[in-house]
Amino acid sequence: MTEPTTTQPSPGPSAAGLADAGWYASWVAPHMLLRRLDGAVLLIRRAGTGYRDGWLAPPAGRIEPGEDVLTAALRETREEIGVQVDPDDAHFVHVMHRRSDGLPGPCHAISDFYFTAARWAGEPYIAEPDKCSELVWVHPGALPPRVIPHVEQVLAAIEQRRPFSIRNWQSPQSR
Image (tube, rainbow, N blue to C red; front, side, top):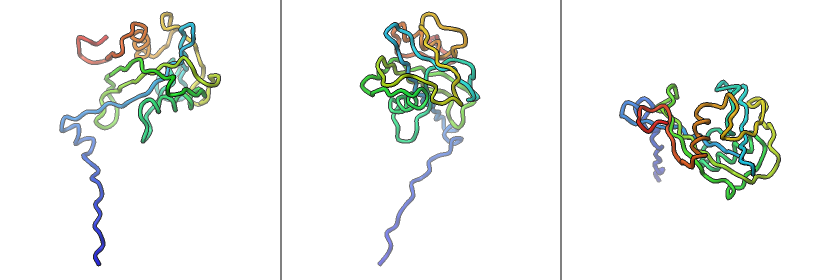
């Protein structure tokens, strides 16, 4: 009796091969804005991450294997500020496509997906003190100093009810 043959899936082209072939990719970053009744949104002061430490941004992160962007945003919110947002209470409000040189592999940009929630379970707290030094409620129309610039742009776009923006591209639509 012969053993059945099995084939391993191809690992696919290398990152360099993709770039050489003209394929480029964007990282996907999920963000969550908790919004109070008075319109203020919760930002965290980054610390110990190596990226924009001391600056304000919403809870955000990366997508883990098997996650969709909303699931990742809900998980990052729970991990970073200790609150639970029901998926039905999270609403997509914006995506920003921004150029970011220096990313690994064929990636040349980041697609930031922003969700907002007006309801959540629990009281926000610093759940990752090695990555966050402060929680700050801010009004999008009166931001304090040191909000990460692309976050500032996104908050303004959300206030103007614009669901899409771009940043750092050579394009007349860049705003």
